[in-house]
Amino acid sequence: MSEITQIQPHGGTLVNLLAGDDETDAVRTEAANMPKIVVSPRELADLEMLAVGALSPLTGFQGEADYHSVLDTMHLGNGLPWAIPVTLSVDDETAHRLGGAEAVGLTAADGAEPLAVLRITEVFKRDRSKEAVNVYGTEEPEHPGVAAMLAAGEFCVAGELSVIALPPHNDFQGYRLTPAQTRAAFADRGWRTVVGFQTRNPIHRAHEYIQKCALEIVDGLLVHPLVGATKGDDVPADVRMRCYEALFEGYYPKDRAMVSVFPAAMRYAGPKEAIWHAICRKNYGCTHFIVGRDHAGVGSYYGTYDAQKIFERFEPGELGIETLNFEHSFWCNACEGMASPKTCPHGEETRVSLSGTKVREMLRDGERPPIEFSRPEVADILIEAMQGQEA
Ligand SMILES: [Zn+2]
Image (cartoon, rainbow, N blue to C red):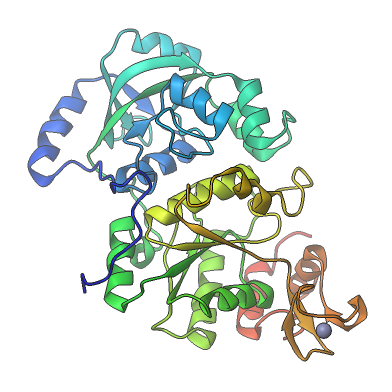
């Protein structure tokens, strides 16, 4: 199985911050006597991503120099592309309380066992205005990413991590593959090239089509749904997962496609998050990454294809993962198949397209969208999940 040469992780080394079996007890004992910080769910997701190497080459929460370098140049201080800072926020009071502490224990809740030790190199004040503009493209507090940043503390604690245990989860147990595990799974299947698909939505025919177009030119497909924090009106991850399972059962070849979950929280940073998502998927072993219209977008903050165009700001080969850009797709009655504006010459009247609002309305009323729009198995799961929800 090791005959297959895989894509290098970002920066060349797949990071693993989990303490080895022989070290865990020592780190745990050490952590017991340290000040503690309760980490928010969003940053806990980053902690997990750091621990398993999804954010390679990072080995901890970033310091001020890298923070500004990323915001100013989309590169780390060492020159490697990076699009969104990965920081650990604390409020003024906590920053004060830490004083000159050299290390701190990170916990998921008050009184919980520390999950990791952070060896503090610095505490710095974030530039909220600059971060909002350079990551999210707006300072509007209604933007969900900006809102989360504003709600988090104004100080950031930086340093290397020693991780005792991953944040506990009681869902998607069979689907929580680390980058090392997805890489092993790809090698087992003999996939040399793999396309990654980021999603936080149920998959309808349009996205199925895009995934399968991409799969036609590579060996394997990784559907990699994000299951960290999302905004409240996104479809819950457990419902989405049931949709993916139904879709895979009925319509995807088992030796060519797999589902695993992506523990990250959603930032809604559009173009910047598209780059961040692509780099993470490179760490998971993907050679290709799908960027659709309005990737990681929200509201009307970003242009439809901004998330595709931003990749042109890197030198060829600089990111190391190849992006595959797609337009929106649809069923065309005249073509008698799925198509996009690139491949279909017909007008709107022949295309089966429904607004998100219309689809939600139909599902809420217990009505399946047309089979040209959504697989009936997927529609039924969404209908069941939406029963009883308020309009
Ligand atoms: Zn057509």
